[in-house]
Image (cartoon, rainbow over all chains, first blue to last red; front, top):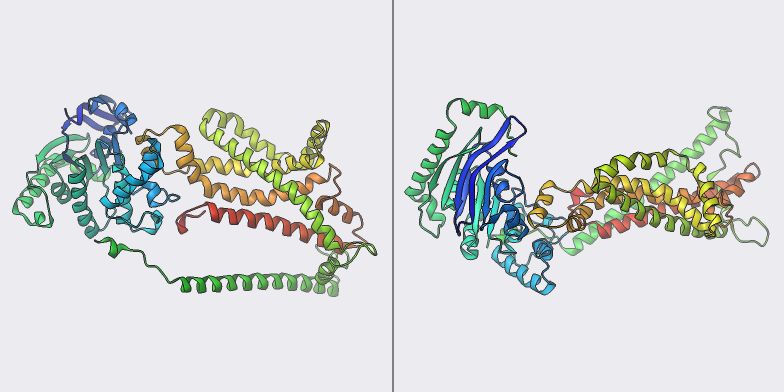
Length: 267
Length: 297
């Protein structure tokens, strides 16, 4: 059974803006899927539709055999945004345990799990800090720990490293892959960066804008586990080129200029 | 691993303590300086206007502007031979008024907060009730106060509690408005996050919206803290309570031409009481509100 199944999913905002049209996608257990595309291609909207944060205008969304809504109620989603969205008034420890509190875990179980999570994202010893005492990269790791704390079936990440500098970003990419391997979760990852998408993913979903459509799906057959050396693999460059070309085909000609002038209705 | 490179620079405890002391000294210095400047300004104004005989905006003489040292000195005079010092009288009065104001403040803050929460959850109620909440504040407190005293008096409620209710009347409004605003200030993505955890309304309120609103609520509480003291003083006037600062003000007002310094002295004590309330709220805020230093409202 697929973890996510999208059938004919469309989304319009108002009468004139079609953010997504005819999306068909199946995501299997343990995959790492990146959604990539120009601004306005609706990749963030698609992610939100999977997570039942936005309702599709038409089409079907099935997550683990249930409706997206039921999956949300069953707490099958872990979400990470571009900003860490940590709660200033809670320590790192209590930020991570928030979803556990909501799921009714008792204090002792929460404590044990939070300790594991801090280890997983290599922040042991920072549990009693407040979020604003941490660097951006560390905050984002707390956010990932929080999203993974309750073992969600699906991890939805909306440009989680977009606000970080290149070096922190590359390091967190590696860490994310390790976490993914260890937790055996399924990840859907929205990004602007072709290299990041290729490096991380098992498949890259290339989208085009106005209306948002899936224009291509590129399978990334780079060997696992990926390391710093993967980025120097000639095949890595071939795949980057393939994704880049798919992106350009998807947003050629007039569409390219329209895209520069109009805003991004999906955000 | 890399977290060591990202570790927070920690300053030594001694350096922090030294900085803290220095900060304290600067603040105390500023306070004294401003106080001295105000004192000097008062005396200079007084001296200039009396020498030139200027009559605008008002005539300056011993009655309208007593010397500062006379006002302060008055605090340590006995109004009747063998009686208590004025400052002792006023201290007791201030304690009495403080009790009324504290109860009124607690009452007003609770009602204000609850009303803010209710209004935040229903657009319909907000549209329907908010105009009346606002209207309640445009009615002069001096018109409302006697009504409260009469109504509550007929229910055999102690008079000081009527005063607390009047004080609460002045207190609740800023709290309601800021609670309403603060509850809506929660980060939209934080709300989405809570939605993704399938959190109920109650959890969303207590775990996200209320903590997010605390800086707003505390700004309101600071306004309300001083307003509650003013409310208590005003509330004492129609309820013929003699034990509080309101009673003292009324009393010294009648003898103003003979003894202006006593009324001024009472005003100083009333102001100190208001400041005490403000500082109490400020300290509570520092204990309760945990925020990035740049995000403290």
